[in-house]
Length: 304
Image (cartoon, rainbow, N blue to C red; front, side, top):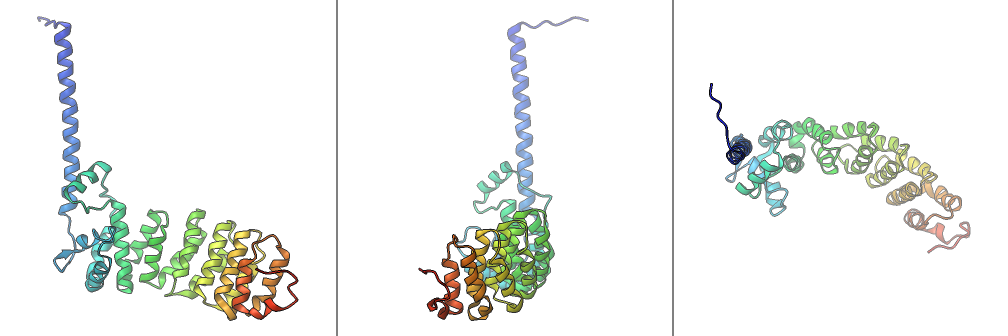
């Protein structure tokens, strides 16, 4: 068998051509895969139509905030009919766009959303529908876990079902302190089930992380519910080792006004026990609860 010998120049040219073809072939595969991902996304069902737009088309307007009132009204009118599509979007964990595919999709549709934006927009649509979107609560709960307990998703949960407060209070035992802090902050919006939220927040005032305890105290004040349980918990927090927690406890008591009259002795004692604290939050609380105390000689210290 004859052996064909190539000159060094021809050999180098052959190698360069082969590499060029290989790179071009790889780029073609990547491009077709990206276009396929975009086409699959575009071809997916887009839900019921209202005023000439599908659910997906309305969702694309949410992150840009240019027609917020119109979008909320649209989902309120769509009502439960939109919920199955929103659930499908929030539960979509397999069809994710990579950065390259997303950049291509944005060229086709400037309002195209990333996976996170679509999840978040679907959760916001549920919030706009209120209890009409109660069936989406399990999907919202899974979404909360997937995105590390973002405050917006937790608030959306509280708006769609009273059962959300119980689900969120369970997260106050999560090993991640950031999750516990976020949940303690969000529970102040639990208007549908304040009793459940108060029980969880009282538990959180004993958390080992000061930031969680501080958020729990402020949320208890914002709720202004279950005074018989909330006020004693805030009074106890006035003697917390952390300055921020003591300040938020006083601020929370201020929001209860005269309903926190039993806290007056503890507020006065707090200023004496912690003289280096910024006492403005305690003074503001006393002004709301019982301003006559500030004019007596029992305080024995000047006030701003």
